[in-house]
Length: 310
Length: 121
Figure 1 (cartoon, rainbow over the protein chains, first blue to last red):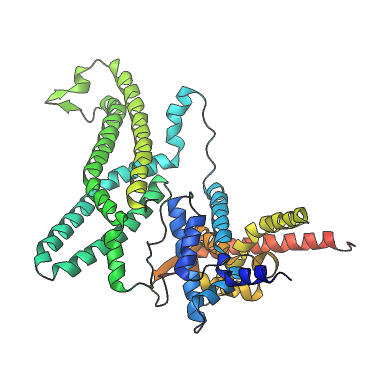
Figure 2: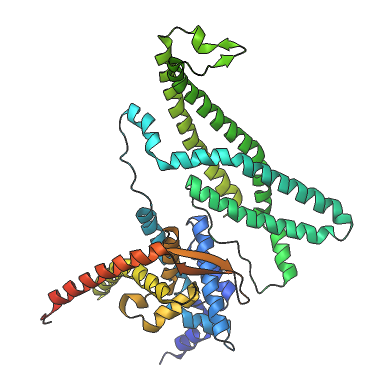
């Protein structure tokens, strides 16, 4: 009989299963290392919901017992990680509209951008970002100056905490916008903190979390970015659309394009009108390409500043 | 033996891909009020056999995808025991999709059954 081996394995049952919910979540996070950050946040959130509900259903059981019980039904951290990785791949391919055949010719690639729904969503985001940018910027400025200014009085402390909490909620909202319009995978669940810890500790966590501060930077950055996106989108669309449609209107005798009282189409020879229309079409598609690029670029900014690092 | 197991696991995985969505929609269609992830998982656990008895963590991503596809509606409510819960309810689209799915399922089940009938192993 090999008693040493038997007692050895008996003494460390924890090598197989985590002993507490935070431990379980840590293992899950470790098992998901390298996966999409937003996916990790969702997986942790779902696991915590399940485990906490199971705890509430079985009062009197310790966390270790509950975890041992759900290992069969919900899955051990490694299994759960594998399931999430697996479904993510399946869903990405199943939910996305079938990708249009990549166009080979240069011309096809240039004009193909108009057939992609993502282009218009990004264009809309560019127009919309002026409004959100102004709102975020104002919110952060009012929040920071009000709470810091009142910090000498006690009232500034709860105000600062409430303000930082609101910033984290706005971060989730912006994340949803970015995912829907720009197609960058973002968290679908709020950032959730360990409920075991006392309130004061959790508030401390909020201050220590680099994400809180990067979100503030993102929100400040949204004003200049929003203005730039809006300007580029409006200028691109209006210039190209006027170039395309004004020759037509000109033929019907309505509408003019004037620069400093100088009527562009009156002054131009009629043969130049079709040329202007061609330039307008090229400019319109160029604007759509810019929108695609801004969509990807901004998705990356949002991912880095709004989703937890590492 | 492991090869044998792998074959079974692969078959179960493929089989579960669609049936889990069907089962989730059916559970929510028969529910009187919105349910959250854990409740749905427990409801399936009670009757789950075969591929439906798989790991319940697999249900959450499916729920989220059904929601993204407009088949389910969801809202978040705070909870005293843990993180805020996301409650799911079936939509009108979900109901009509479910009706189609049920017909497809029954037809498939019947034809598979008739093929398997009289099979001696």
